[in-house]
Image (tube, rainbow, N blue to C red; front, side, top):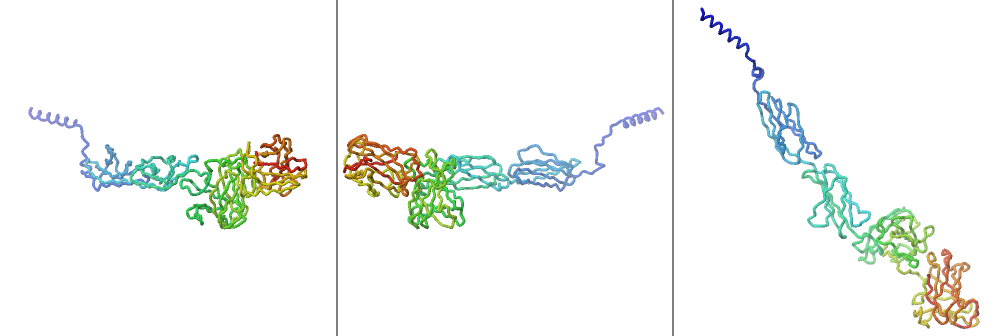
Length: 528
């Protein structure tokens, strides 16, 4: 009986122990059987902006989450819940992306899939190459494009050139060491292998200067047309080795259509006008006689400082050298101002007439270091064998050109003028010369003349007259101070009006006294 009692107590104790044991609910074998993820796949989408941004979409049946190993230098995987995705930036290249799919019961499936990231080539590449405003040897380069990361530029002037890198919005400059033709190459880089390239050939040349001949390959002979003029380089029809410029005044072109030589920088040096040298010349091949050709010079920094003058063609379909004298400005334009810097020139063919398609050739634009005239002009030194020293005598005087009888002192020239005031000649007896152009008194207002007379105290009169109207005149008197020796007399015409166009020079010796048959010598009549 006692044994049975002990057995019952033991059973009760075991029941109590069992009833106090902790329950474990991790066993889900009753809820879901063990399943390995299946049909694992990866979908990649790559943005098309060369950022390298890739979106990875993992998918599998029976997966609760995924681990994504990107296959680049990133070592830690990304965890993605079922139905989610992950983004990652890659450099251009080839990668193997590994995905591990995890089920709720801990089973896994692994998939490795190749990924290729390729950047598209830059598009809409626009390169701007400009000449520097100051240096003709310097260029400035900038560029824009889409899908680019940066640019490289090669200037093409050295072997094995290392390119210069620059970004969009930057300007990269380069100065060439010498004139020549160079190829500038700009490369737009995508951040990968894809590139887009632009090339442009440029000529580095020296800035234009007088004379303008169109023959020096190192000079920039570019021109700027305006008002309907059209200019191109051409070959001289009379000499195929000579380069010229051809300008067409197109039908309907403005009356003021013209062409600026060079560019807005003008000439290297200013036109060296002086009081005695006021001319430029240009060879012109015109289709007709009587064409007005206007030449304008100005300050390239201030176009309000300018002077214009004209010449008229006198032959057709052949070359002619036209002389442009800026001492005689065109009507309605400013006068020559020697204080200005004239370093830019423009030519206007058939000025004042609308364009009708006429074609002109032109060449050899230059400054004349000595004024050229189509006739006699100051200074008069009587040395020319071709100029017409045609004296007109009156009142009993007679003048001619003779060999200098007194080669001494201040006058050792070989030829001089000689005026003989005949016996009984009028007190106002004299002689005059007519000039090819009016005297330019815009800057100098005195005339000097060397004389040889037999006595001191003689009245020498110099008179200037308008060629068409002798009533328009001015005269000055100077007394000699030397007998039988050369003396340089100064006739002061201060206040003279140059616009009166004095073109006749009249000389009187021993004015106011009747002639006695004596001969007086004179030479070197000139502005001073």
